[in-house]
Image (cartoon, rainbow, N blue to C red; front, side, top):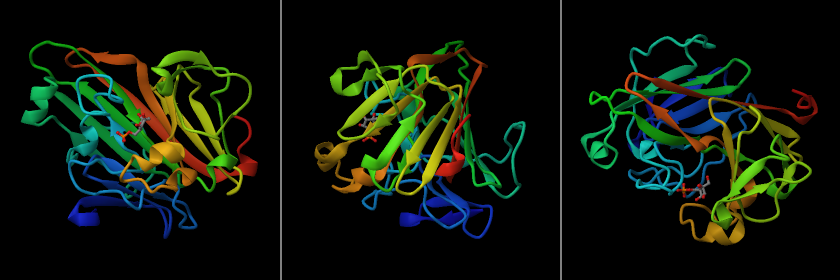
Length: 296
Ligand code: TA6
């Protein structure tokens, strides 16, 4: 059901139990909240977030499409995150869903103006599903609906902001020994050495062809986020740290201590779709007590 969110923007509240819930704004098709059975917020959302088009919402899960980052002709991270999406009343069936009340199907089609800057017709459908164990699944399906016979190419990311208690106590497992492009060094390619990733300064790396499972261990909270992804080869890890944070007006100066972006993405090898073709990219997030998190 639709509800009114901040600044009167429409949002959908998904609920599995009294506290277990998620919220999705039609503005951006943007997940802004994901709460566990104790009512604890699992996503970071900036207290300075501006819920006003055309500024994308800072935090939650921004959708980067049809261009990840600012490498390309479009605005940074593309336009999907600052368009008003619609509820998709008759979505094509997906194989499984967890509960009739706890999912929503959204759709984005290009506006006339979008077609001027990115001249491709598409249908971007996304299902947001809150499972009975509190897992949050986002399934995106992007179809080329060009009538002119032309293929199109895009990059993509679920730019998820996780809430963490203290960034210097956090480690990420599943990316060690992988190649990455370092966004702080002109996207030069390096190989990650040794152990799990820990954080003591600004990081902005695109890990290439990663395993489908990545874990974020929050030592202080004794919580592990498990990220599972499908159709998205890469994973971006971003934390702006103190100096960069000060240049981001809708991010609190100290907020970098309590957030970490781990983003399921398709960046190194852009996706190309011919007319009629569809791409699917799936993200599944779960949050479990740390003691249960080891193993695959
Ligand atoms: O995913 C990392 C990144 O591309 C960084 O380079 C950083 O700029 C961040 O996203 C936030 O971008 P935004 O356009 O939302 O300010």
